[in-house]
Image 1 (spheres, rainbow, N blue to C red):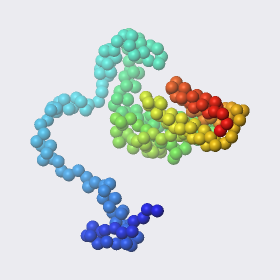
Image 2: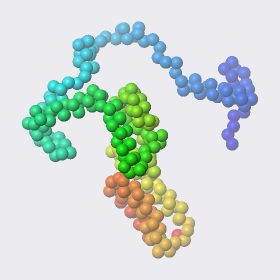
Image 3: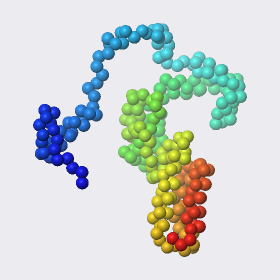
Image 4: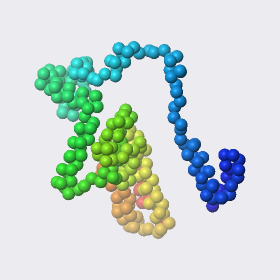
Length: 255
């Protein structure tokens, strides 16, 4: 068993007392992983030449306006970027006098970050109604939130306080499944492949007849993959690898 028998104080004194060893270790790692803050850098910044004028800075940091939203819509190709409703950009251009106010309201609310707090409150009301209708309650103490990289710290604190959830920098897994799916879907499902192999290795030393193997594959191995595939569309190459693993196990003679 690893153990620390002796440590040195900052003044060079050695100690073998367990209490003092704990104090020295705590102080060392506290200083190692803490910072005293950024020192005054004003004298350095004064020598850096400004590249952005005050007028340009006001324009860049100002809120978005309706004309900018319409300019983006107008610059899109007439048949490009159809939405989930199937309407191309041309439909919005020709009917802007009808739908323009709603589009401006939504886009400016998102771009100017005016809908974050209101959206969180609406979500909480929806979850409350969901509980009363289906007699199912959301446990906010066990719930987590994950935000994009451009979300400000103020918005994170606001949403966390309104919903009563904690934030994560890296999304966790829930019941063995990934909470979020990226482009690398194969890597997200690697644990599924590993679980299948571990279950087979656990039975590799047991003698199973062909009928027993068939029952084991259908009732155990396929159940592992079925649960995951019920919620996510698995990559084809992953499905092929899982089929190959089960086929090799089923074709072996006497384990």
